[in-house]
Image 1: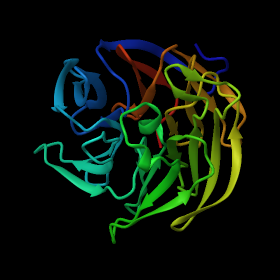
Image 2: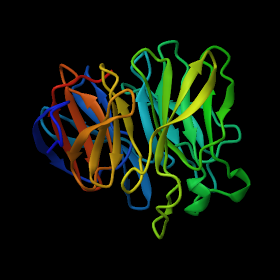
Image 3: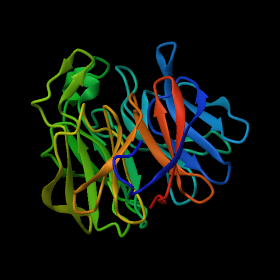
Length: 291
C-alpha cells in the first residue's frame, strides 16, 4: 500500500461506515474522532467513539463547518464557512458543554482549514469556494491565508498568492507553514488540471509569512488535507489516497485509499492516521508519529 518503506504502513483498516467528510480531529482524552458531515442539507460536527465505534452528533447545525483543530486548552477551533444568512467565522466549541464562541468573523469568505501554533496563534485558509459553490454572497469573494492573534483577537491577511488555499500544516518546529493550493477544483463540475494543484511552503517570520516557494506540484486530483509527522514528512491528500513527502519535497510514497478526503494523526502513540472518506473512516497504522 506504500510505494516505498518510509513510513511503513503496517495495517490499513476500516473503522466505521458513516457519512464523513472534513476536519477530522483526534481527541486523546476521549479516544474519539471529531469530523464534519453533510446530512439533510446541513453540516454537522460528529463524534466517533473509537472504543465502541459509535457515532453521535456533537453540534447539529454547524454553519457549514469544514476544517477543525484542537487548541491548547482542548477546545475545537472550527472553520465555519457560513451561508447567505449566517456569516463565515472562526469559532471555538467546548467539547464538554457544547458552548460555541465566535472568535473572528469580519470580511471572511468561506474558511477552510486551520492550525493552532504553540503560542496560540490561529492560522487559517479562506478560499472563495462558498461563492463558487453558491452558498456565500459574491461580495465576500477572496482567496487568502490569515493569522488570528491570540492576545488581541485581531486577524490579518498573511498571503494572497494562492488560487484556492486549502489545507495547511506547520512543520514540527513551526518554522515553516505548508499550504495546499487546490485551484484545480472550483466546484463539482468545474475541474481543470491545468489550474494549481500544488503545495507551497512559507517561512514563518513572527506574525508574517516570507519566502514563498513550491514544495510539491501536480498532485493527482488536487491537494486538500495536510499533516506533518515528527520527522518533518508532509502528508497530502490526493485522488489516490495520501501522498507522503520528505521535508525537502522528495516523494516518499503513497497510502493508497481512493476517495480519501482528509486525515489526522491519533491513537495512544500518535501513530495512527485516521482518514475520512465520504462514506467511511479508515485507520492507517504507520511507523511514524504525528507532530
